[in-house]
Length: 186
Image (cartoon, rainbow, N blue to C red; front, side, top):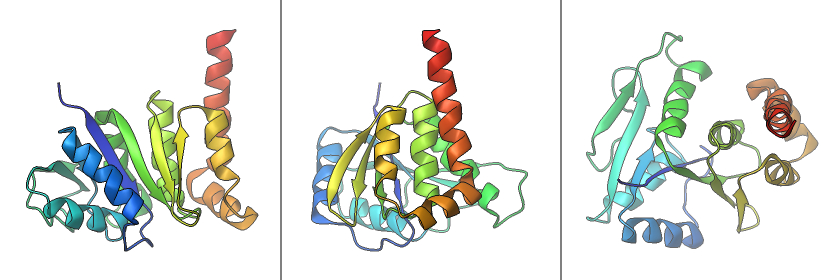
């Protein structure tokens, strides 16, 4: 059975750090399959990097009819959604599907992106771990528990946390994970 890695990140990050490329090289060397979105930013940067490696296995996920980017001409998974085309919910549909099919995540995060946080939370609610590269300070953080997620949030400004809460209901989603964990141990 093939191990699948959901690689994603902030749309504002256009260049991959050498540490990120090194991790992707390890993913390729282990013959893991990459599931990646079709957006600009990290998604297209990941696609470009993978396209330069003949041995890479990837599937591009998109919402709707077809991908915005598929730089390696990989197989495409189009995710059907009833949400308005171009809306946040429309694009989130593909992210949810990638979290479902992946075994774990590798996220490249700018300490602001609510979408990247949402992906980490989607994986966490499915009991799947993520390795997060905090691009601003060039460190990796393992996220497999709600405590580790809350530690990751310490890198965000209060303003960024509030914006993320507005966009993805950050605090209620974290509380839902905590409540689920409490029920397991009750």
